[in-house]
Figure 1: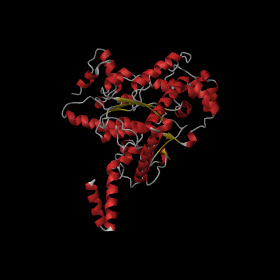
Figure 2 (figure 1 turned 120 degrees about the vertical axis):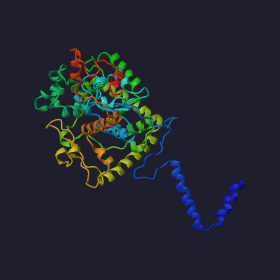
Figure 3 (figure 1 turned 90 degrees about the horizontal axis):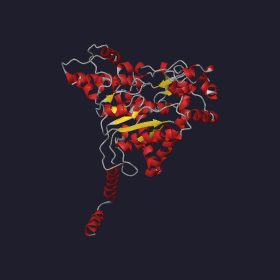
Figure 4 (figure 1 turned 45 degrees about the horizontal axis):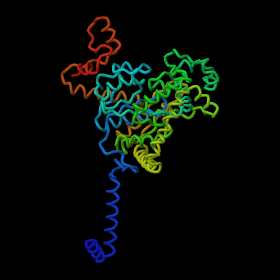
Length: 440
């Protein structure tokens, strides 16, 4: 009390101008200390508005993202790729024979991982979930994450995107989604290679049986339990920013770790309006997907309510402000999606599935020379190729004069093995240690 009175008397003896300056300085310093704001172009770390995410504030760096189809997963993948680069982490990438996916639609196998990317901290490319194989690849403390999308919106996107690949879609007159849904069994070909795009795609990506009888309620309930035991977080595409807030809290990441630009979007002309009637038909045809989505959408909002909707909204607002700030730095304003042919930089042109659909991307202004800006809009195939090249250089530098395996087809190596010819690759079913041994 005595100390406080003395301080008060000293303040009274100051001039009004000095008092004002002291108070302003004190308030500003208190605000910065309390909120932990870093003075930089982009806030590196803002405080969690809700309860503390946990006792440990160390960033979680071992993450397996199960990338599902047409669920905004390419945007999430880009977040993980940039995080890995920023923190010098190894990303598991597909072998050359698998292109930019882990030989999808086959069940995931360690054989599909490029030898340059063994011992990863992050995996985020398309695969069909094979839990036992994935756990063999990743560290023991890995967090598993995936993302789901409302089945009606997702199916509309699948029908448009894969219309020229999936025979179940390709044979429909006039490429009419309405015609397909009027009698899906007439067109659905379960034995063809890409039939999973036409029926319960989420279930397939997560390793389930897409044609299992919907009357067997026990199947989907058991499947959901397995997914709950594996995934620490199931994101919901319709609530993308809220999902990122939950992810940031789970991983103790900084705000700059989750900023993004929407990627792999279709042009407005490539989209079809889904009426309530069509939506009901889609959900009935993809009943397993619908039950899966409805369950995890409900549990997602339980997590939001536990934290406090108002608190989560504050962090969503912070994320959106950071995105706007980054957009001004990279684009001079809001990023404007462009058709691939309109993008000057060929390395930024997104892959086009067919001439029936247009995937838009972004062009960077000539003044935007930042590597962050470039990576922010780099399409999946180009970023995957870039990371593989970058990580390959690191491996070659580490190995020095030792000869590395050429990036040949795994299938070729395996066929030689079965013919009794000595192959440089471990045989099918080999342990990950056998794979690593050829690199050490």
